[in-house]
Image 1 (cartoon, one colour):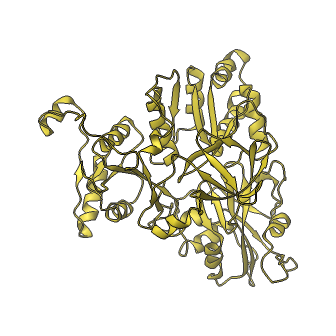
Image 2 (image 1 turned 30 degrees about the vertical axis):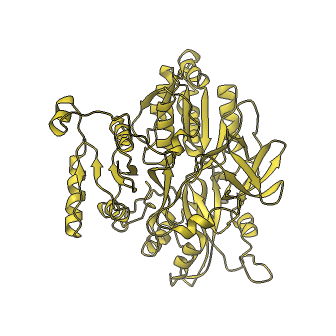
Image 3 (image 1 turned 90 degrees about the vertical axis):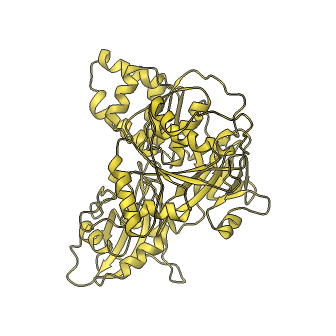
Length: 498
């Protein structure tokens, strides 16, 4: 086993093959760089060259993908090693004389085993290097835990792959659905019974709720009961990524007889806090208590920026010592950037310390970048970018603009088309309000935009349970996906972490 760090890329669909690839890479002391098969070849090659990777494993069901990446590498003068996926015993003995496991080989808990990524605000995403302890810190002797975990999210995401590996290490049965399986597929699997562990983002739980209300709630009681029984059999129902709205919490509590468990975590630290299944936090943004072996402190005593210290903490940001150093305080606590206060033994999240970032479905958009892009459009005379609450995404990027003459009928689609030459697609606004002549963007005495006042005035939403339907008719809203029809796709349009 090499003593220096070694990386191998995987460009694979969520599958049994990907899990085998992870443990195979781990077994030789290397680290996995899980990449989406939907990335552009240029993006894959960027990761490959940045990490000086030793090879790329492509999914066996998409052989053309590997060829496309190889051809792109040749065009750019980069020779790469494409590693085959060996599926049968006979194929193994054709490539290796006699495979065996050397019991003398041990892997340090501090050795890098995976590179995960947070969305890049501009350009490629930030590499986050985790050690073996990321997966093993909470493990004792390998147990045999009864139950079935359902995997439905693309495994190149840190939270998804981590949940899959942890389920395997706990000895659970794992079922893998088609990545990004729709609500109908999830409900039909729950209908069959036996699923005990299910986790997903806020948007995932909202989509399931809406599907039930629209398609299943009207069924005769006898046909509906297997669906509701399937939900009640869930021992673990975790919700992460953003705070669920009260209506979402109330729905799932009524369905399960106990609430969803809200989970706080980050790509750098993994899960840090979780609400209990015995506590009802319908009307508060509670993130619960620290999980085992996690320490939490707040910058101002019982409130302020939350800082955490976990046994699953990342090793470093890739090739960025300064960012790694700045991520921790003098006591070694990771600075989360989340503003929190304590209520008894529980922690309540208030928002982000850095208010110049909008987190939409896990993708981070700098407000200044979007405002700069808007300023480059000759028909925009004034603009401010604000976060608008979305029960599925957490927040939306909203543009509040004043236009010059003859542009009073500006549409959201036109604005996105024109901004597409200045911004990656995932940062383009999906909410727009055009100011009338008499309307003013509120500002502080020093001339800065009073963002909360502007948001409350022009994008008002229910304070307790905000949703997009609260917005006035003057506001344009649309659900544009990351792909754009108005120009060819560019690198990092999706933040690099699809």
